[in-house]
Image 1: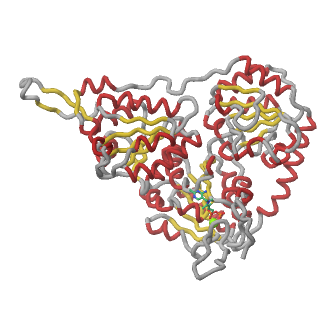
Image 2: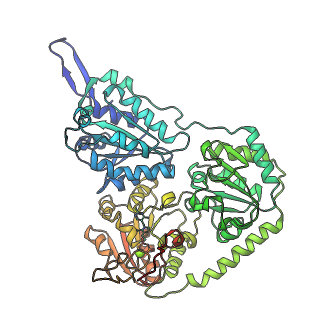
Image 3: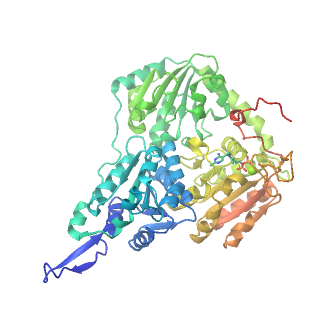
Length: 579
Ligand SMILES: Cc1ncc(C[n+]2csc(CCOP(=O)(O)OP(=O)(O)O)c2C)c(N)n1
Ligand SMILES: [Mg+2]
């Protein structure tokens, strides 16, 4: 029990001293009881003391400059640890700033709890204009998996338990917990308070697939002439890496890894089809999705990307509603990834027939051809750099330091890094995820460093970085081993656009020759300006060896990028003739 206050209730019981606790301490005790070690936070009314007290009680409280970054940190902490990441904010504006991260966590199936203080209920509900008035619960509800409000201190324990369960069980996601200011100072008997706390038992229970579903899936897989497995970040989240490796290797099926699943098996694995993506998507006759959704990132399972060859889909997912979301799934397997893949592996037995050898041979030939074609571009030492030269250098660093965490956002900076930088270990690549959202960079970097203790390399487009750039101060303040590389091409996609009407700069360009490295120096970190791949390589290695917060301004040719990176086709086109 935390430092509960002592109180003399003289009127009723003059001789007896009753120990009291309050809302502040019950929240902290409930979180601690459930193993919460870190809170990502921005202080202010009514949660300043909650943050202070949590810190005093031994929870690590990381204080950010903006709630969206604290929220993103909590979300990725959830992804990395399978425990809900906790973000704590003030009411209305702080809550709204955190809400983007909560919605993003839910979209990406990361377990996270946004705890926000809120204003006086009676005034909020009568809309009488309280300080930071907002009906936060109603606003959060459609944007997350579950939302709860606590009005009585005695309910804090059960509310925290519900929030944890909602966040991590089934398909994980974001949960909102609304704590009105008045709750924090509500007192109750300390012993009763302790009894009201709930330690969540088995928060994410196994969900065992039906044997008939496993048999159906294996029958379809066995019938394939050109099978393909696609691993999504759900498979990486599950932390059953060895079972997945055994399944892939026993099956003999080539595999693709979605962006954040890269490294679940090494991208250099003999069965990896990563560099032959368009071939395998077009030509496969059976596709097994493991923790990957058929959303826009996989062209909804249809259209040009998937070619004309008829296909059957097997899907493994914890969420039953995912089945048939875009196209027919002939073999749905509903359950948690660990239980499902174990059951598949058991069902395959010891003499599973691998797919026809000519299929794997075709995939390998295409893959190796593409890799060979790319190789010379990655070795150029041009100055200013192009994306390939700069990424060739970073690819080498990651190869030599496979346990480092890579954070990646931007457009060209994202799409090209995803293709070029091989990953070797699970959950080492963290990026813009399902939404392709900018702004995750520094929040993810802080949490990745704190949750894993590993060095972090954040590869950021210059625009992408701007969304969370102020957190370089946070990185310096906590002295985190984070090396940020900014691909500075002076703009969004490119730095060469010209406004055809007037003297304002074009909408996609930034200040030329800007020096982001100076931002880092302002807070005591190391800043480097790198103009060639060799310089970049040296600077990144030095940063990681030193463990010091470092920002490298990598000068990229402003003309090097393409519109929207690899997804320019998603831009609507004007039908009106250009002036
Ligand atoms: C929150 C949010 N706002 C806006 C966008 C639109 N957007 C996509 S990529 C991008 C920035 C791309 O520029 P940069 O990060 O410099 O990458 P580059 O292509 O230049 O390497 C923007 C603003 C987004 N994805 N998310
Ligand atoms: Mg840019």
